[in-house]
Length: 191
Image 1 (cartoon, rainbow, N blue to C red):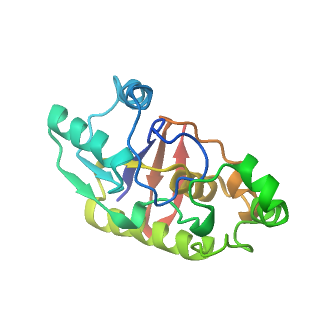
Image 2: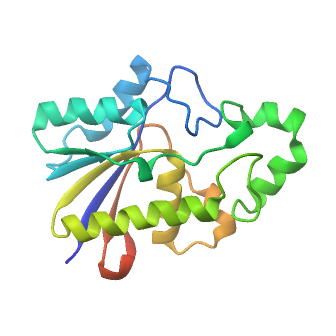
């Protein structure tokens, strides 16, 4: 059986852009509006799964109260941990660590930010979590409220992109995408 997995990225956050990673900042009013607009007229979902970070979880909790599906918080669907780069913008890193940032952008699987989570481990964590969702909820429609990195990874896999193109996948705040998760972990994007 197939799992219909809709992916929703959190909206704009209070601390702004940059590499948020494990930082747990809240949504702005605009961020709430971006997410509400993305799901307007969508669904219904059989269940909601969310990263436990508040920029995702608070919206998922609001949506669950409004529309009634059960909600599950899943730490394995959190953003990549950027280590010493957390909270910094690409512009700031270009001034202090341009060579390392260039290596990361060129192939994030081959370069890990200082004290950060290797992308290969992040990928294994996220894909294993999605496989568990398929095993538990195949035949259902699930909304996953998560992060740009998680969504880039899943969309890159669904699109068959080489690993060097992971960071080329565009995922705006409040973006909504749909995937089909098939047995064996095959991901297909629904357009």
